[in-house]
Every structure is written in C-alpha cells, then in structure tokens.
Image (cartoon, rainbow, N blue to C red; front, top):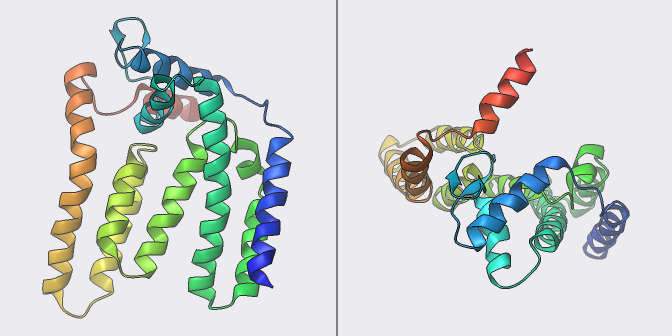
Length: 230
C-alpha cells in the first residue's frame, strides 16, 4: 500500500508545483546569465569577460550550462531539473524515513508532510539550486545511516558546490563516524579517506575560484550576511 502511496504523493506534489511553474526569482536569472556565458565559452562571469563569483552554487551553473552546450534553452533546463530533483527529494525522504522508522506507513506520512512544506513547494521548479541541495542532503544522510561514510562524503562534496553550508554537514558526518565506532583506528582511516574524497571534489573549485576571483567564498555570502545584520 505504501509503495503505491508514495507514487500518489509524488504525483500530487508534481502537479502542485507545476501550478506555479512560471515563478522565477531574480536569482534564477543570475544563474542563467552565468550559465549562458559558461556555455558560450566566455568564462564564469555575469558580464562578458569579467570573471566574478556572484552565485552561491557554481555546480548549478555548470549543470545548467551543460544543457546550454547541448543546444537546450537554459531557462527550461533549470526549471525542469529543479522540479525533477524536488520530486526525487520526496522519494529519497521516503526511503530515509523507512530506514529510520522501520515502518513504511509512517515513512509515507513523513514524505506526505514534507511534500506539503510551503517553502519547499515555493522553491521547487524556481530554477534555483535549492531542490538539488535538499536532495543531496537527504542522500548523504541516508548513506550515513547505512554506515557508508565514503559515499556520504562524496555527496557532501557535491553539496558544498551547490551550497557552501554543505561543509557543515560533512563535519557532522565525520563526528558521527567517530561516535559510531568503539575502535578509533578504522574510524580514523575512514576520516582520512572521506577527507580525501571530499577534497577531490571541492579543492579544484577552490583553486579555480581563488585564482580567478581572488576568493573561495561567493560574493552572495557576504551580501546576504550583511543584509541579515542590517
């Protein structure tokens, strides 16, 4: 019953989001501008030939730009992928809830409640990186519950390129790694392997951003922080 129920939840969620598919915030157009320049070979910039780090998630720019290279409309790519990732997030949450609660009916209720969250509904299909970040966060947590810390660390690396806060989840996962074992030796081994895999994904972008923009932090981080303070 729950197996068919989750299909109904996802379908209703999809239809609900599709009703406001045209909702596109200003930040989405910033991503589209960056993706357009990357796809055309003009570099990672908002203005032509003027490198800048004006987006929160560089990975989202690259994903949308990949569609542009293939001849697809970046706007359509961003919106559809966002909606797809949002639907997948609902499915993954169902799997995660089933793993934690050990009850498919409760897991179905959890997924249903999550699919009704106003903020998640708002940002789904907006063309932003939000749904992809939620999906990767849930996938990372799911692998932690399965004690597959290396895969979780790889996922956190990708998450950090969508949202800088992903490094915090990576740190929490490593703490769980040490707390979840009575022998420090294998935990330490997993930690260093996880750190290597995480760095393998994140460090190349850090090197590129520092050499191109003079900083590994996005301009949006400082701007949003200032707005919250004021």
